[in-house]
Image (cartoon, rainbow, N blue to C red; front, side):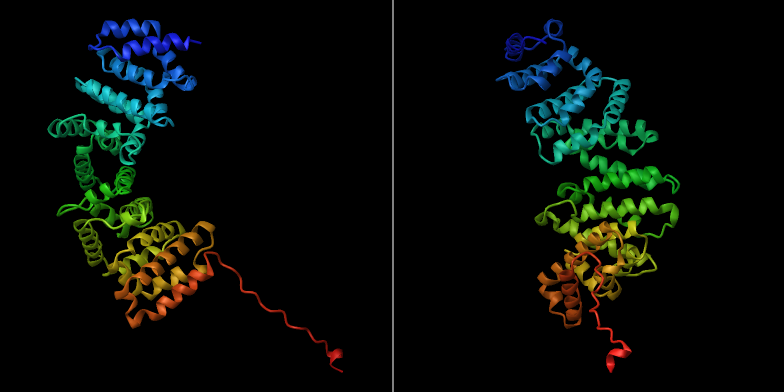
Length: 413
């Protein structure tokens, strides 16, 4: 095991050197303390005072040299572990290391190789979490690595190369640059428009990617912005009749719409800005008008009339959409929907019962707080029915039949 005091002293000297480090100084340091030794010290000697912060600063400066950046591809497993570390400093280092990797893409071969590396080590969702959840401030730094015009060119080039390998390649833009989110959405939007109906796997991946972005208020707002929002693909796929071959696509779309509507967000982040909310309503009504169901309530009911997996996704989606007064009105205007969400016998599995019950509670809550809808005399019976269902709880309980005394004929005399 390396002497921690010697490592700490050498790393401190390297980290706090006043000038820029050359490849020669980086090589000299690595000859004394190879990267595996430093990574091991980060993982096992975190209790040594000052060692972690010093090594983190040292590695940041090391990877900013040409030599250090060239070594990053060999140590991607360590970067992957670092993105999941408990230590904020280590997570920050891992994000900056990916930045160093991207900044040294000086030819098409390196671009393609780095995209494959990031994909192969499943770093897209890890980087996305670091950025969107605000886990580390360097997530923002990572998103600002390039000016927008350079980003646009690089993303377009990367997209052209990655199309055959699947949509997940382009999703790296979300994790690499904040200003690139719009470009990514536009790219996925264009790809979905050009996909053949038989490209089901790629289409599902694209819808899931949009749903992931829609989990966060910023992403959901972008997906519902503009005159032709990218979320239209999600809404169309969620409600169009697709038959058995389109089951996975519709299911992915329903879950994505649930995310966009607010399922994974806090209660005060469910409702989006005015433009996004107007577009959400408009897209659902337009989809309904093109269908045989004609109304959003008809679309909702059609989902709840499908198999258990689809119904569960429908409950999840409606639990969030119903926070909008227009959706509450649609649901309350369809007695069949109320019957389904209030009937404990509708579902037979635990997860199904709980999904139905959560949806029922959400409708009841929205009806209670909406003075305009709850004041409508036509909905008084619905409010009472929802209240009774909420009080019953999620699970189907067989009604207790009171025992009757059995009287034998001989006992009567």
